[in-house]
Image 1 (cartoon, helix red, strand yellow):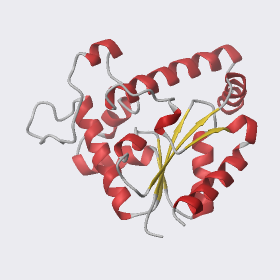
Image 2: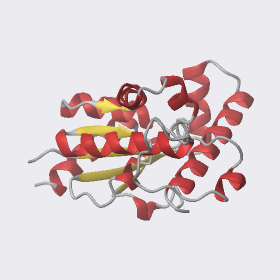
Image 3: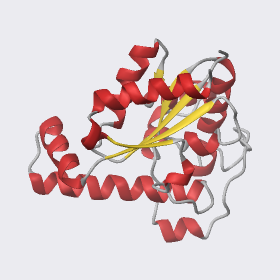
Image 4: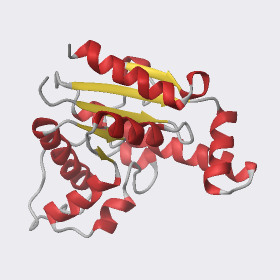
Length: 207
């Protein structure tokens, strides 16, 4: 098998990052999430905090951003005024994601990676979700917050992830199962079984 990429989109609190991390260990391949921001900073020379500030979210309101043109695959030069614009920061990350897909097997969490790599034959895209009650319980335990705060965090995080995905994919719905090879309910089957299922699907697709 040549190199392959597994992209993981996830609802907040569904355990998507945990599943991705365990899967990477099982498959003995790297898992990229925050690391992409560091790599983008190193490649461009732009401070990493700029990438963190737009990590799967948009500056300003979604409606305001809709009035702007949807980006294409062009990274602007450092001398241009839009060098640190949201669109250019996204395109820098997208360029890194495409390079990773060409050079190594890996797992990429978030970052619209399923869309960015949508025409690649070596990609498996996965969406992880769970019922709100399960996500709330997970966030309360992981972040040591109240139930009310957990609900707030889930609503806020899922909203900006959804808007980010919709903007950079030209209006696609982040939760639409058609976007993915696999859609898994981590509550019904359990996170460990999610890892097993994705591993099995890798074998099936790339046999």
